[in-house]
Amino acid sequence: MSLPAPAEVLAAPRLTAEAFDTIRRIVSERAGIELSESKRELVSGRLARRLRALKCGSYEDYARLIASQDGADECHSMICAVTTNVTDFWREPHHFEHIRDHVAAAAIADAKAGKPVRFWSAGSSDGREALSLGATLLDVANGSLAGADLRILATDIDTDILRKARIGQYAAAEGDKLPPELRQRWFRENGGTVEPVEALRKLVQFNPLNLKDKWPMKRRFRAIFCRNVLIYFPNDLQAQLMERYADMLEPNGYLYLGHSERLHGSVLKKFKPCCPSGFQKVSQA
Image (tube, rainbow, N blue to C red; front, side, top):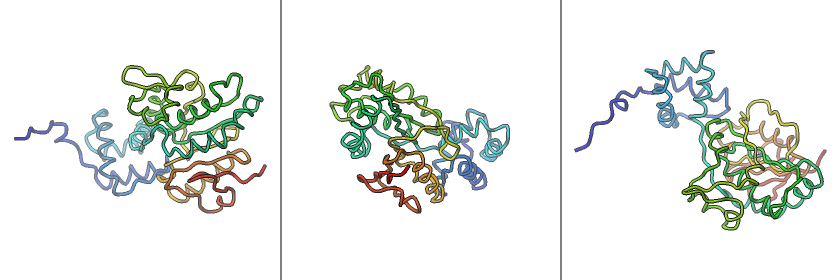
Protein backbone atom coordinates (compact mmCIF):
# COMPACT_ATOMS: atom_id res chain seq x y z
CA MET A 1 0.00 0.00 0.00
CA SER A 2 1.50 3.32 -1.05
CA LEU A 3 1.46 6.37 1.20
CA PRO A 4 -0.47 9.44 0.06
CA ALA A 5 1.62 12.24 -1.42
CA PRO A 6 2.14 15.35 0.71
CA ALA A 7 -0.59 17.95 0.27
CA GLU A 8 1.80 20.47 -1.23
CA VAL A 9 2.79 18.00 -3.96
CA LEU A 10 -0.82 17.19 -4.76
CA ALA A 11 -1.60 20.90 -4.95
CA ALA A 12 1.39 21.78 -7.13
CA PRO A 13 0.29 24.13 -9.92
CA ARG A 14 0.65 23.12 -13.55
CA LEU A 15 3.11 24.96 -15.79
CA THR A 16 0.89 25.96 -18.70
CA ALA A 17 2.15 26.53 -22.21
CA GLU A 18 1.45 30.26 -21.90
CA ALA A 19 3.42 30.64 -18.66
CA PHE A 20 6.27 28.50 -20.00
CA ASP A 21 6.47 30.65 -23.14
CA THR A 22 6.83 33.76 -20.95
CA ILE A 23 9.54 32.12 -18.83
CA ARG A 24 11.53 30.84 -21.81
CA ARG A 25 11.28 34.24 -23.56
CA ILE A 26 12.63 36.04 -20.49
CA VAL A 27 15.45 33.51 -20.03
CA SER A 28 16.41 33.93 -23.69
CA GLU A 29 16.29 37.74 -23.55
CA ARG A 30 18.19 38.08 -20.26
CA ALA A 31 20.66 35.19 -20.40
CA GLY A 32 20.68 33.98 -24.00
CA ILE A 33 19.77 30.44 -22.89
CA GLU A 34 17.40 28.54 -25.16
CA LEU A 35 14.78 26.39 -23.40
CA SER A 36 13.14 23.94 -25.77
CA GLU A 37 9.63 22.58 -25.28
CA SER A 38 11.20 19.36 -23.97
CA LYS A 39 12.51 21.33 -20.96
CA ARG A 40 9.04 22.25 -19.67
CA GLU A 41 8.92 19.51 -17.02
CA LEU A 42 12.48 20.29 -15.86
CA VAL A 43 11.65 24.00 -15.55
CA SER A 44 8.45 23.22 -13.66
CA GLY A 45 10.35 21.07 -11.18
CA ARG A 46 13.06 23.62 -10.58
CA LEU A 47 10.69 26.55 -10.18
CA ALA A 48 8.19 24.78 -7.91
CA ARG A 49 10.40 25.68 -4.95
CA ARG A 50 10.35 29.34 -5.95
CA LEU A 51 6.54 29.32 -6.13
CA ARG A 52 6.31 27.78 -2.65
CA ALA A 53 8.80 30.30 -1.23
CA LEU A 54 6.75 33.18 -2.63
CA LYS A 55 3.40 31.54 -1.80
CA CYS A 56 2.54 32.00 -5.44
CA GLY A 57 -0.60 30.09 -6.46
CA SER A 58 0.04 29.61 -10.16
CA TYR A 59 2.72 29.76 -12.82
CA GLU A 60 0.68 32.44 -14.59
CA ASP A 61 1.03 34.69 -11.52
CA TYR A 62 4.73 33.84 -11.31
CA ALA A 63 5.25 34.65 -15.00
CA ARG A 64 3.56 38.03 -14.53
CA LEU A 65 5.82 38.74 -11.53
CA ILE A 66 9.11 38.06 -13.31
CA ALA A 67 7.96 40.07 -16.31
CA SER A 68 7.21 43.12 -14.13
CA GLN A 69 9.52 45.86 -12.87
CA ASP A 70 8.90 44.72 -9.30
CA GLY A 71 10.07 41.21 -10.18
CA ALA A 72 13.69 41.99 -11.12
CA ASP A 73 15.18 40.17 -8.11
CA GLU A 74 12.93 37.17 -8.59
CA CYS A 75 13.76 37.15 -12.30
CA HIS A 76 17.42 36.67 -11.38
CA SER A 77 16.51 33.90 -8.92
CA MET A 78 14.48 32.25 -11.67
CA ILE A 79 17.43 32.31 -14.10
CA CYS A 80 19.70 30.83 -11.41
CA ALA A 81 17.12 28.09 -10.79
CA VAL A 82 16.87 27.00 -14.43
CA THR A 83 20.60 27.23 -15.17
CA THR A 84 22.29 23.86 -15.65
CA ASN A 85 25.40 23.38 -13.50
CA VAL A 86 27.33 20.30 -14.58
CA THR A 87 31.05 20.13 -13.83
CA ASP A 88 33.79 17.93 -12.42
CA PHE A 89 37.35 18.07 -11.29
CA TRP A 90 39.67 17.27 -14.22
CA ARG A 91 36.81 17.13 -16.71
CA GLU A 92 38.13 16.62 -20.26
CA PRO A 93 41.67 16.07 -18.95
CA HIS A 94 43.38 16.69 -22.29
CA HIS A 95 42.83 20.43 -21.81
CA PHE A 96 44.62 20.51 -18.46
CA GLU A 97 47.36 18.31 -19.90
CA HIS A 98 47.76 20.80 -22.76
CA ILE A 99 48.01 23.66 -20.26
CA ARG A 100 50.59 21.68 -18.28
CA ASP A 101 52.71 20.71 -21.28
CA HIS A 102 52.43 23.72 -23.59
CA VAL A 103 51.14 26.81 -21.74
CA ALA A 104 52.02 26.82 -18.05
CA ALA A 105 55.80 27.24 -18.10
CA ALA A 106 55.78 30.36 -20.29
CA ALA A 107 52.81 31.82 -18.41
CA ILE A 108 54.55 31.35 -15.07
CA ALA A 109 57.81 32.82 -16.37
CA ASP A 110 56.00 35.88 -17.71
CA ALA A 111 54.09 36.34 -14.44
CA LYS A 112 57.30 36.09 -12.40
CA ALA A 113 58.91 38.66 -14.69
CA GLY A 114 56.15 41.14 -13.78
CA LYS A 115 53.75 40.67 -16.68
CA PRO A 116 50.10 40.27 -15.62
CA VAL A 117 48.95 36.83 -16.79
CA ARG A 118 45.26 35.98 -16.64
CA PHE A 119 43.19 32.85 -17.24
CA TRP A 120 39.39 32.77 -17.46
CA SER A 121 36.96 29.99 -16.60
CA ALA A 122 33.69 31.20 -18.17
CA GLY A 123 30.62 29.34 -16.94
CA SER A 124 32.64 28.07 -14.00
CA SER A 125 29.77 26.50 -12.04
CA ASP A 126 30.93 25.49 -8.53
CA GLY A 127 34.60 26.13 -9.22
CA ARG A 128 35.98 22.67 -9.92
CA GLU A 129 37.18 23.65 -13.42
CA ALA A 130 39.02 26.75 -12.20
CA LEU A 131 40.56 24.84 -9.28
CA SER A 132 41.73 22.06 -11.61
CA LEU A 133 43.40 24.72 -13.74
CA GLY A 134 44.93 26.42 -10.70
CA ALA A 135 46.29 23.15 -9.33
CA THR A 136 47.87 22.46 -12.72
CA LEU A 137 49.62 25.84 -12.76
CA LEU A 138 50.75 25.53 -9.14
CA ASP A 139 52.16 22.09 -9.80
CA VAL A 140 54.21 23.25 -12.79
CA ALA A 141 55.48 26.13 -10.65
CA ASN A 142 56.26 23.66 -7.86
CA GLY A 143 54.16 25.85 -5.61
CA SER A 144 56.44 28.85 -6.11
CA LEU A 145 54.31 31.73 -7.37
CA ALA A 146 55.41 34.34 -4.82
CA GLY A 147 55.47 37.72 -6.50
CA ALA A 148 54.00 36.36 -9.73
CA ASP A 149 51.10 38.35 -11.18
CA LEU A 150 49.04 35.32 -12.18
CA ARG A 151 45.31 35.01 -11.56
CA ILE A 152 42.34 32.90 -12.64
CA LEU A 153 38.98 34.60 -13.12
CA ALA A 154 36.01 32.26 -12.68
CA THR A 155 32.58 33.59 -13.67
CA ASP A 156 29.02 32.30 -13.79
CA ILE A 157 25.57 33.82 -14.14
CA ASP A 158 24.31 31.77 -11.19
CA THR A 159 25.12 33.65 -7.98
CA ASP A 160 23.93 30.70 -5.86
CA ILE A 161 26.50 28.35 -7.37
CA LEU A 162 29.19 31.02 -6.97
CA ARG A 163 28.53 31.10 -3.23
CA LYS A 164 29.25 27.38 -3.15
CA ALA A 165 32.39 27.93 -5.22
CA ARG A 166 33.72 30.53 -2.78
CA ILE A 167 33.20 28.13 0.13
CA GLY A 168 35.21 25.53 -1.78
CA GLN A 169 34.08 22.36 -0.03
CA TYR A 170 33.48 19.28 -2.16
CA ALA A 171 32.54 15.70 -1.38
CA ALA A 172 35.68 13.61 -0.88
CA ALA A 173 34.56 11.29 -3.71
CA GLU A 174 34.68 14.25 -6.11
CA GLY A 175 38.35 14.70 -5.29
CA ASP A 176 39.02 11.15 -6.52
CA LYS A 177 38.67 12.48 -10.06
CA LEU A 178 41.83 14.56 -9.66
CA PRO A 179 45.23 13.06 -10.48
CA PRO A 180 46.46 11.68 -7.13
CA GLU A 181 49.55 13.89 -7.02
CA LEU A 182 47.50 17.07 -7.53
CA ARG A 183 44.98 16.06 -4.91
CA GLN A 184 47.72 15.30 -2.42
CA ARG A 185 49.62 18.56 -2.98
CA TRP A 186 46.90 21.14 -3.56
CA PHE A 187 43.86 19.88 -1.62
CA ARG A 188 43.32 18.87 1.98
CA GLU A 189 40.87 16.45 3.57
CA ASN A 190 38.38 17.86 6.03
CA GLY A 191 36.10 15.15 7.37
CA GLY A 192 34.06 13.97 4.42
CA THR A 193 35.10 16.86 2.18
CA VAL A 194 38.07 17.93 0.11
CA GLU A 195 39.11 21.61 0.01
CA PRO A 196 41.72 23.63 -1.91
CA VAL A 197 44.78 24.73 0.05
CA GLU A 198 45.19 28.44 0.67
CA ALA A 199 47.71 28.94 -2.16
CA LEU A 200 45.17 27.52 -4.61
CA ARG A 201 42.28 29.56 -3.19
CA LYS A 202 44.28 32.75 -3.66
CA LEU A 203 44.78 32.06 -7.37
CA VAL A 204 41.06 32.06 -8.19
CA GLN A 205 38.58 34.93 -8.04
CA PHE A 206 34.86 34.16 -8.44
CA ASN A 207 32.65 36.87 -9.94
CA PRO A 208 29.10 36.89 -11.34
CA LEU A 209 28.85 37.54 -15.07
CA ASN A 210 26.13 37.22 -17.67
CA LEU A 211 28.01 36.35 -20.87
CA LYS A 212 25.37 38.17 -22.90
CA ASP A 213 26.11 41.46 -21.13
CA LYS A 214 29.04 43.86 -21.41
CA TRP A 215 32.23 42.34 -20.04
CA PRO A 216 34.07 44.53 -17.50
CA MET A 217 37.49 42.89 -17.89
CA LYS A 218 40.23 45.12 -19.28
CA ARG A 219 43.18 42.74 -19.59
CA ARG A 220 43.47 40.03 -22.21
CA PHE A 221 43.70 36.39 -21.21
CA ARG A 222 46.39 33.80 -21.82
CA ALA A 223 43.67 31.14 -22.05
CA ILE A 224 39.88 30.98 -21.82
CA PHE A 225 37.91 27.91 -20.80
CA CYS A 226 34.30 28.02 -22.03
CA ARG A 227 33.36 24.37 -22.03
CA ASN A 228 29.85 23.00 -22.39
CA VAL A 229 28.40 26.51 -22.16
CA LEU A 230 27.83 27.51 -25.78
CA ILE A 231 25.56 24.50 -26.37
CA TYR A 232 22.83 26.29 -24.41
CA PHE A 233 22.89 29.31 -26.73
CA PRO A 234 21.47 29.82 -30.24
CA ASN A 235 23.94 29.82 -33.13
CA ASP A 236 23.98 33.59 -33.58
CA LEU A 237 24.90 34.18 -29.93
CA GLN A 238 27.50 31.41 -30.09
CA ALA A 239 29.15 33.19 -33.03
CA GLN A 240 29.09 36.54 -31.19
CA LEU A 241 30.68 35.04 -28.08
CA MET A 242 33.42 33.32 -30.09
CA GLU A 243 34.31 36.65 -31.70
CA ARG A 244 34.41 38.31 -28.27
CA TYR A 245 36.58 35.53 -26.87
CA ALA A 246 39.01 36.00 -29.76
CA ASP A 247 39.21 39.72 -28.96
CA MET A 248 39.82 39.00 -25.25
CA LEU A 249 42.72 36.61 -25.86
CA GLU A 250 46.36 37.61 -26.00
CA PRO A 251 48.15 36.99 -29.31
CA ASN A 252 48.73 33.23 -29.49
CA GLY A 253 46.28 32.69 -26.58
CA TYR A 254 44.16 29.57 -26.18
CA LEU A 255 40.43 28.83 -26.22
CA TYR A 256 39.10 25.53 -24.84
CA LEU A 257 35.57 24.42 -25.73
CA GLY A 258 33.48 21.40 -24.73
CA HIS A 259 33.94 18.20 -26.71
CA SER A 260 30.63 18.70 -28.55
CA GLU A 261 31.27 22.37 -29.38
CA ARG A 262 32.94 23.72 -32.50
CA LEU A 263 34.16 27.02 -33.86
CA HIS A 264 32.10 28.23 -36.79
CA GLY A 265 31.63 31.25 -39.02
CA SER A 266 34.14 34.06 -39.48
CA VAL A 267 35.97 33.25 -36.24
CA LEU A 268 37.42 30.11 -37.84
CA LYS A 269 40.15 32.16 -39.50
CA LYS A 270 41.24 33.54 -36.12
CA PHE A 271 42.18 30.17 -34.60
CA LYS A 272 44.05 26.98 -35.36
CA PRO A 273 43.54 23.63 -33.57
CA CYS A 274 46.02 22.81 -30.80
CA CYS A 275 44.40 19.78 -29.12
CA PRO A 276 40.96 18.09 -29.10
CA SER A 277 38.39 20.92 -28.83
CA GLY A 278 41.23 23.33 -28.06
CA PHE A 279 42.31 26.22 -30.31
CA GLN A 280 45.16 28.69 -30.45
CA LYS A 281 44.59 32.24 -31.58
CA VAL A 282 46.40 33.08 -34.81
CA SER A 283 49.12 35.58 -33.93
CA GLN A 284 47.97 39.15 -34.33
CA ALA A 285 48.28 42.38 -32.36
